Image 1 (cartoon, rainbow, N blue to C red):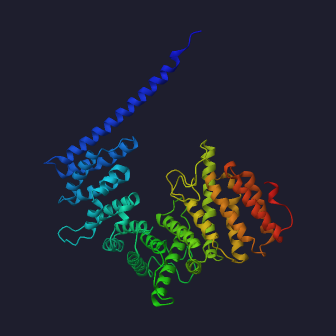
Image 2: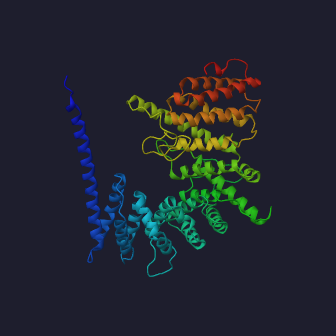
Image 3: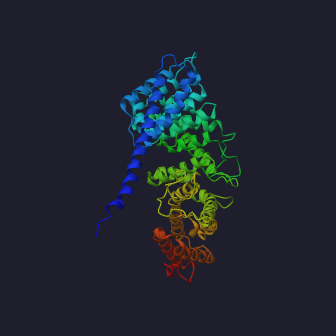
Length: 511
């Protein structure tokens, strides 16, 4: 018989057309880039024409990056030369547009980011921010753009952070204390990124003093987080501003002070500042959500800061761990007896995630169960797929904090355990409606709580029975990819029952 050789030709033609379309698209973006370069290099160009070119430039380099088209070294050099020309302009609006283009372009294109660092534009930004020339003051709008540009470079080029001088760090601290919220927030975000090992001891001490002063200045205003050693009641004060939460996150992220005498005034002041920062973060993190509104950026930053400091405390020297646990008792953060705590916030958010997931299923859009934790949303490693498209992942961040805090819990008594289980069991009953990545983080938290409960013999028998019923249900309803975590939770509950808290049934039957 004849071989149907023509059967493969339509597919070959389709592939050829696809390659041709991609080549055409790359050429189109190259032509657009050439047009922007020509405008930047015109001799008699007007500021408005330059601003128009700068607005187009970030999208062009982003499309080149998406199309895997390298940005030529010559093109980078010409772009940077044109941008420096704009930065030297007498027009404040053009200078702002140039810094915005530098930020957006560095964020969108790795080649351009590397070229900006090699060109030393981070030094120019730092010099401008620290300038005292009254004839050309740095506007607050321009400062926020420059600080965001520096943050992009620090996050993508470690040599930028490592090369900062003490004087430059001091300039950043000054901007973090400025009156304008946008510029201060940008400066504190940059400082927070630098606390990840980029600061030497003198710079760390300067940053600590600046952050402590900012919190102290606000202690009688919006930043007051209550008195005493435990987290303030969420309803006691308004949610602190993003600037104050960032200052608190910076302070708790710094390494301990060195060389101070034990019990001296310096150590007491540092202890007081750390306690104030932890209380502020706890109050902001546990703030109840406004109905149908997404969490604020301040709340998400507070949750991330708490997760980081609690995780670091678990690996710290005994003295560092003791200080954190004393200033912010984990049991009081998780399930305080007199007010809603983190676990109540977590349970409510998990139930909202379950409801959203159920609605998606009813519409025929199943959540992706093969997606790794943390792949979507705002960066919470424990939850991942718990956020709707475009929404921050509050559930994931709450799971991160809860898991870290439970790892630090010593014997807290039956009261807090009762509060904790009362908060989480309603969400455990809906575990089958949660995305798999969220199930995984939630089951880990439940297992840790069951382990903590084993040391408490006074947990009521009927509560243990409810826990056992929930364990059976999680084994039955959990997604296949996280069923081992459900079985692990059931095993912890089996051990809890075996200690004599209850005498009938066994969650291991379902396992």
